[in-house]
Length: 281
Ligand code: NDP
Figure 1: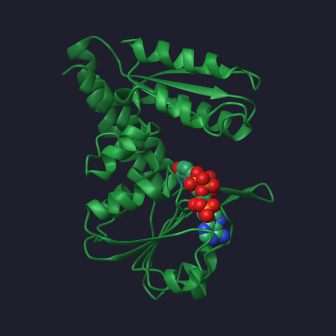
Figure 2: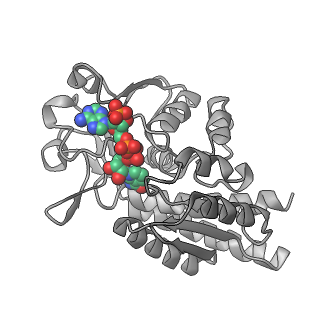
Figure 3: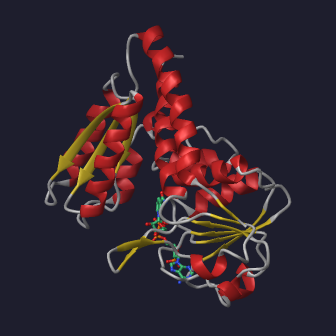
């Protein structure tokens, strides 16, 4: 059994990205810039965005954070996105989800310029993904694919089961795996007999946000298990997988924390640099 080290994978991506940024800076006399909009009081969003800002600083990406109040009006959020869309010093835009309930998530996502939409929030980019164009693929699914590929795990022809069908993780990930010739099944809360599906997985990807959902009796011997879930239980971060009891049955497994999370942040950096480069073509 191999416990996949997400931090190590992320660190290699940072090294490569940092070197690339240095070259781009010399060539264009400008650095890639990622703008993040946070609306409201979601504490975990704040912590996450702050941590991401530090990484930006370390590798040479300019980070601009727009921290808006919980009672901000939708039109103000849309107005800010419009301004950032037109700012040629901003190359990537992320609106941190969830948004307060009075703000329409669909409208906000659709307002982000598709060319700066580094986490694939705009439905246009999800559509591109469905037609095999991964230019603006979202960062968590990208991280899952990077983990599989960098660990030498074969995807083509394999039975892949994803638990979770959200727009930012399960759905786009299913498309990306199809693009790589996997046979993909997507499960969700209405799936009858989840275990029947998970037991069939050569590669099982848990992205439900439900602690301990995937138990030892739900996987087959030597399955690859990727845990995307982030849950807080008794002040500890845990995934969706019963790691301790599954680890000896799986051939590869990602831990939480230290698995998909760090690689996702690395992918945001990489996508911002890619958006920067495209803005120069
Ligand atoms: P959502 O809540 O948007 O979606 C969860 C999905 O899982 C839904 O499709 C839901 O089904 C399904 N689901 C929930 N519970 C069950 C269950 N018991 N059985 C079967 N399916 C279930 O979450 P996200 O996609 O945004 O995130 C998923 C998890 O990944 C969260 O823990 C989140 O924190 C984490 N995450 C981690 C990231 C990382 O970098 N590591 C980045 C982004 C998210 P239905 O559609 O029927 O409701």
